[in-house]
Amino acid sequence: MTKVISLRRKQQYKSPKHHKEKSRIDFNKIYEDKYKIFFLIVSIFGLFLGAFYFRLTDNVDLIEVVSNNFTKLNSSNFKSIFIFLLKFDCIFMIINFFVGTSFIGSILSFIFPMIKCIYIGFFSGYLYNEYELKGVLFCLLLLYPCFVITTTSLIFASNENVYMSQYIRNCITNKISTDDISIKLFLLRYFILLIINVVCISITSLLITFIAPKLNVI
Image 1 (cartoon, rainbow, N blue to C red):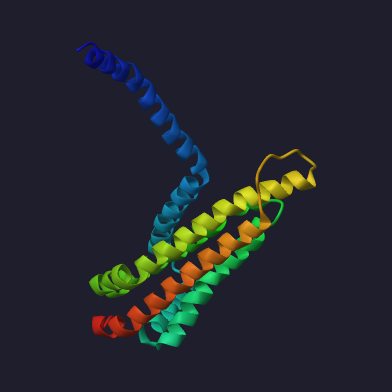
Image 2: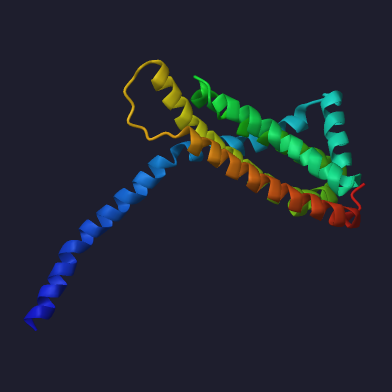
């Protein structure tokens, strides 16, 4: 009986400490992911900004570019769709990579997820305006899953940019840095993200090839 009481008191004594420790760990996790959270917020803002801009703009040339891009997606073969989506993704990933290896990469890295999402928002606004429910269905079934994965990869890449750029800046300014930064690891992470995107784009291109004609958007 004494042992049972003792164990209960021991649990009651340790429980608050355990909760505090767990709370501290969760807070540290959030702090570690602060750049990812920031890039995510910026990306979501870019989606709304792109859709809102479509409602306001009368830029015929820009709308024509978006229209031609959608025509390529909706009426081309697997190879053409794959190349188009891969080019669209690689433009942001490659430029983002070189920015990450620059002195000011930590400042500029948020721009590319935002620009990409602005275009996605503008593109979505165009499809909804021109094709209504069929356009929305085309986005939801065939494009958004791919865009979510590739944009998430871009956010992770931008997060890597921040730390690499800070490390480069510290090296240039001869500041003492305790960061465990590895250029090989930086390149490896980019390579893995690129592989993920290529696989995602391949699957998306295959789905568009077979499903898009059945939707009969155009």
